[in-house]
Image 1 (cartoon, rainbow, N blue to C red):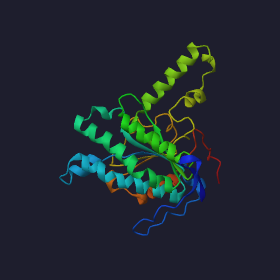
Image 2 (image 1 turned 180 degrees about the vertical axis):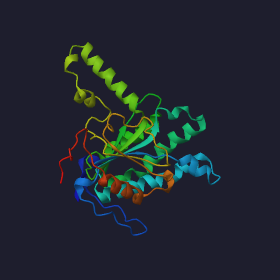
Image 3 (image 1 turned 90 degrees about the vertical axis):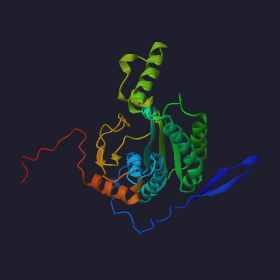
Image 4 (image 1 turned 135 degrees about the vertical axis):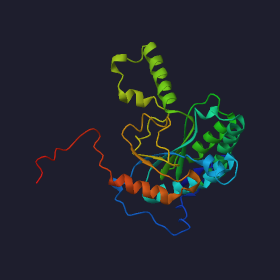
Length: 273
């Protein structure tokens, strides 16, 4: 697939989208009908520090090793047909970590975006950012916005980097924005619905989460996408994040495809023969 990309002096150059390279093992995604493939996968990339400590390494080494995992999982998402991946890169609660680790994570997120944005663009991935601006390093914001601008026309898959993000913070910020609209007389409070709230979230057009994936064996959401994941299917993997690759995603998608999603409905089988 090719399209034009604007360059300097009004010139355009062709942007050719290429598929990601296959997994080194030669593994291919399972044959799952697209209607059973989740449209949106939210990922809590957990276990970096424990992975490193188990090897006698500093926690930061685990974060560094996890970079390749994210890249490979995005490749696997493209191959199996997942259209949205949301990655929990830095939470609003992560500021509680040691100053050294916070500084490392800020610089690491900035550098990952700089290193990988061209690869994402080549694969046709649109990179977006969800999260709060306050406290976030200006250099991180710059790299997020640069990646967003570079990839804004891509439509193969969307990678939402959730940096300085928290589910409760997102809902609280939406509530503040709605309150301002009500106070200004632009919105009738009696007409506020779930759709109204959704319209004020960080990425209003992001579809609801279908598959919520967490690594490292922990089984909690940790304040990630609490609004969007209201009807998600949850899959918890025992692997630490640096040990995860696209095959881990594919196994989770297979689990998802076997689930019966009823969204609060039910089927009465009492009269079944």
